[in-house]
Length: 217
Image 1 (cartoon, rainbow, N blue to C red):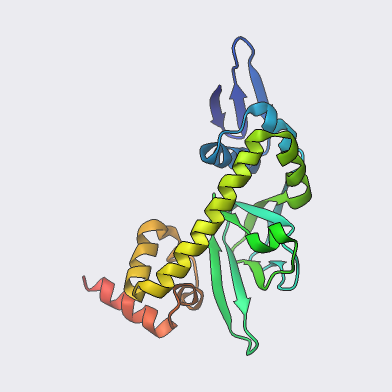
Image 2: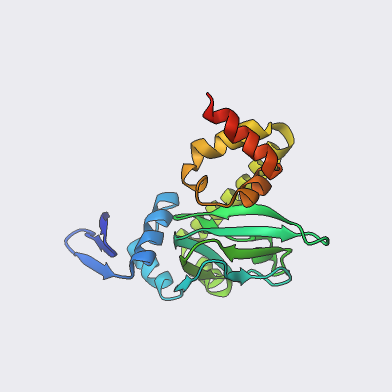
């Protein structure tokens, strides 16, 4: 059973044997998150670990452009990523915001292998684990644990998109902002107001009024 995950060292002690896997901290960080979502045995993790890439991106670097296929699921070890749609008139709308210990992906593009209508860009210097599509499919074929993880991630992607769409349809801007502050407080002061307003489906002026009103409470 898993007994210790600390400082990039994952240890396990099944029975009498004692196994130690030393890896980069971003990979250990991903393992902690994946194992919390759906348990991954150490032996299965060893199979998958070699397929992963850790890459550093500077702030404001585009990772995927619209018109490209999302060939990776991104796991953020540190940093911040914005996924957005660019309209014909040049205006962009924030679709997704992903911070540390979260995944970023256009899941529709990833699973259908069709070009995405979204652009994915870092907002801060970021360290990201890249999970490639083809290698992940191979893992699904040989590892029930990874198959279950893939199922859970697909459900997570659907629910997150559904909840966001429903929130934009049924909740007030005030409620959406207050919920974001409650659930993801670290984002509020890290994201330019224009991007944050776009994510909430309101104008920057409306966001300023909401913030001003909250400061008086």
